[in-house]
Amino acid sequence: MSSTPSFGVNGRFLTQPVTGVQRYAHNVLDAMNAALSRREASAPIIAPLSTSDPSLSAMPLKRYGPLTGHCWEQFVLPARWRGRLLNLCNTAPAAKADQIVCFHDANIFTAPESYGAAFRGVYRMLQPLIARRATRITTVSTASALQISRYLPLRAADIVVLPNGHEHALAWDPRLTTIGPALTEEMRECAGNGFVLALGSRARHKNLQLLFKIAPALAEMNLGIVIAGGGSDVFASETLSTAPNLKVVGYVTDHDLAYLMDCALCLLFPSWTEGFGLPIVEAMARSCAVVSSDRASMPEVCGNAALIRKDGCNFCTDCGYIGACG
Image 1 (cartoon, rainbow, N blue to C red):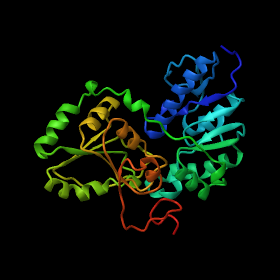
Image 2: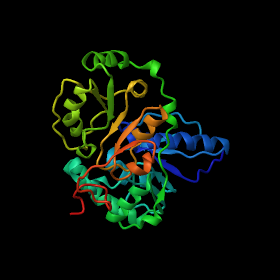
Image 3: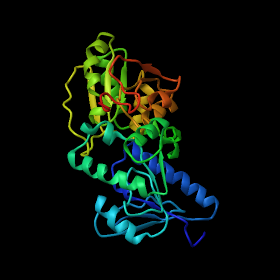
Image 4: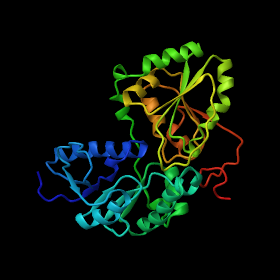
């Protein structure tokens, strides 16, 4: 293998829970590792001391300390890695110029109430600095590029769109589920015609409160609702009601998710704003029908393969969020 890597990867995301952003990064690393292996080349992953090794043959993990989180990324990472840097998860060292950064969305600006004050403050300070200095900014949808260009010093035409893939969902094995059979049986008992599935954190822009509002109407059709997905301390809390035919199961494994998608009547995706909406293509890959909102990137990602819910809300086509533009 080449002894002189041409770039390194910011591996801070390896210390974080896996949401859509981190899954994108993991999938990019897997594909990149395969490409580097074919070329007999290598590129290191630079990460904090506490990081678990993803064991990629062409991408050795290099751990450096001290510090963690944003402090590690802003001070330790640029000091220990002077070469070109690839950043896949919304942030990067603000002082570094020779780097590529993926901003997945502009949600910190379009849906600020979904985030805690500290997280909001850090991102609003860092992202404009990174946008001005980085060699290249990428994102995951054309809609996201338009949003980002509205709030950061970038032209949409200068942002490279590199969408999410779906292939990882085909590797999930529903036979390895730990909660699937018991949960589906529970839903059959309370709603004889099966259930619909929703995924996501409780961030307000995910609009999961809508599911509680429609639960009685679905109950009349003998349908249940299963909401899966972990929370995150970066998100502001949202009070969710209860309904007899609704089950919130929290974090599930990929194999559990495969089982639920394979058994669900459809995936409901009511989000107000998304950079991409990864669960949409994951569900489609597993032949699970999708019912989505018509906001932000969702029409772009769904195309004509989903039922798009048109509503009469005050929707801003520039930023993809209710009221965000005033």
